Every structure is written in structure tokens, then in C-alpha cells.
Image (cartoon, rainbow, N blue to C red; front, side, top):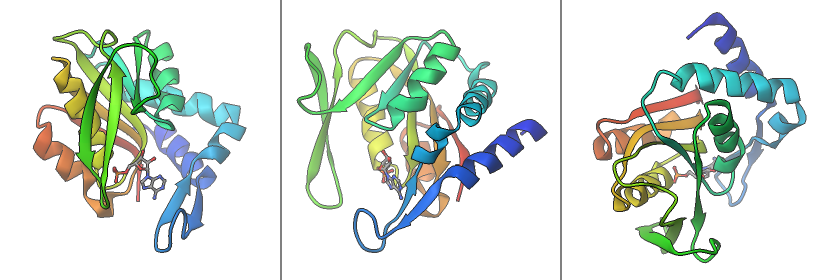
Length: 183
Ligand code: AMP
């Protein structure tokens, strides 16, 4: 990584706030909202993400609800790519394709507009944070349901001790998996 990008990552890590026991005991929540109070930091993060991915071959960026929308759209705009929203079930107004997956307790369903991703596209999937990889894996499966493939995964934060990267590598061996910062 370039020296400048390393400094950006350090500034980003300094801005991210650790909230203990949220949303439940034992979880240390990484609150990224202070990043948005610093427009120069936001600009520099978008440039770092652009540097990381601009040579990658992909047709669109897919953001995962809801924090994946924040830098997802910014990256897509910077890289002149279409931006696609993956949302929780029942939120998207037009015809959708859905994917159901298991959570620690129970299950969840995510959706995408069926005309938002074209068959044969390569997409970059972006979310704020990679933990166990379950959410990102489900997003990738939904992309595949529309006949597209995951070319890359992008996260601001990789909680590497939870091994989400290994889960994604196993499921999507051709995808580049990149966390701007890791813990
Ligand atoms: P996972 O499916 O376990 O990889 O969890 C990733 C999703 O849950 C992302 O959309 C994150 O925004 C959210 N998430 C999981 N763990 C945390 C955490 N410690 N801090 C902030 N967000 C988290």
C-alpha cells in the first residue's frame, strides 16, 4: 500500500468509535459515523478505494443495506459505474429477486431489483464491515442468482479474527477480497 493510503487508513481507524456491548453484550460495535463528520477524510477514503479497485474489471458496484450504501455510491460515482442497492426484504418497490440465508438465530432475506444487474456482469460488492462473512456471502449468492458474478469484495473494516475472508474465499474463489483496515 502507498504511504499516503496508509496514513488515510490510520486516520480512518482513529475516527472509528468502538462501542462496547452494542447491540448486545459481548459485541464491540465499530461505529463509522464519525468518519462522515470529516469531509476531507471521506474524500481521502474514496480516493484510497479508487486506487485499490480502479484497475479491477467490473461493471457495477453493489452496496449492502444500509452502511454499504454510504461509500458504495461514492465509489461508484468516482469510478463512473452503476450502483445497485441490496436491501432487506420488502423495501424495494419494483420487481425483485430475493435470497434467504441463516443467521445465528433465525433467518433473513435480502432483495435486489431484478433489472438492476444484467446477466454476465462482474460486480464489486461493498459493505462497511466484514465480520463472520454471512451477510457478504448472501449478497454474493443473490448476485449469482441474477446470472452475474462477484469480481471483488470491498470493506472499510475487516474484523479478521472472525475469519470472514476465508468464508468468502471458499465461496467465491475468483473474487478479490479487500478490507481497507483490519483488526
Ligand atoms: P457478518 O455477516 O457477520 O459478516 O456481519 C457483517 C454485517 O453486520 C455488516 O453489514 C456490518 O455492518 C454489521 N456488523 C457486524 N459486526 C459488526 C460490528 N462489530 N460493528 C459494526 N457493524 C457490524
